[in-house]
Length: 85
Image 1: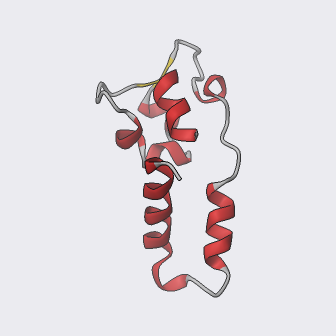
Image 2: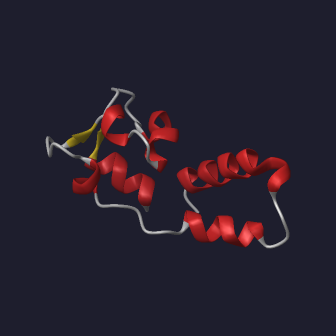
């Protein structure tokens, strides 16, 4: 499990807090394993980077700073591919 996936699972578990039920850990794992959209789908203007506004409203918005490995405020293809692998 990649660092991103562990962080995502921890955030998801914290967000669900008292609302979890038996079997929900499996459901959370299934959601974590759901296919992610391609880089081109998220990079709406196809300029080669994903901005915070392009990530808005998606799973990526919640972990943007963690995925942005070089902390330049943008996510390039390599950073995105690392996050979804």
